[in-house]
Length: 206
Image (cartoon, rainbow, N blue to C red):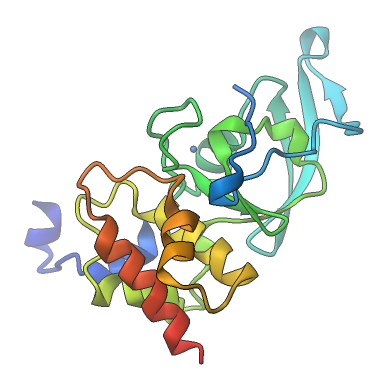
């Protein structure tokens, strides 16, 4: 209602740019999702009563952050609640739906399945980091052109898995694109259009 009073209207472009699409992860070989090795060797500075908090430094979308987190906090929670990057959606919160997918050191992972303290020194890319100013990433553009978003809740996760695939394999075939997105559930069943968007983005880069 407030938007209507101001005479503004939410476009697909602004929607895709604004969304980001927030248990311990296990490897999903077929989708390219990998288990983080970040649990090994991290040494965050502990603080708080009983040392239940830690200060970590991580890079998100090219910017370094120093954040104090609880040891039990997930990466999804820190991205959303501490850094305000709400494009990372929380759906199942148990590493099953893929709505919270981000790219960590080049690999797509469920942010709800990664503890924040494991992210010390990691390079994280969220959907907010894809656009360059007002210019959307080619994959975001392709999702618009091929009607990839429906309800939109899974869209950011779908885009991040697609982006991770294209980073590793710039020219996937249809089977590879489907496999790359298979760790992301779409409650609207819009898989064909999401796969078409990934293939179209790959074709644009030729």
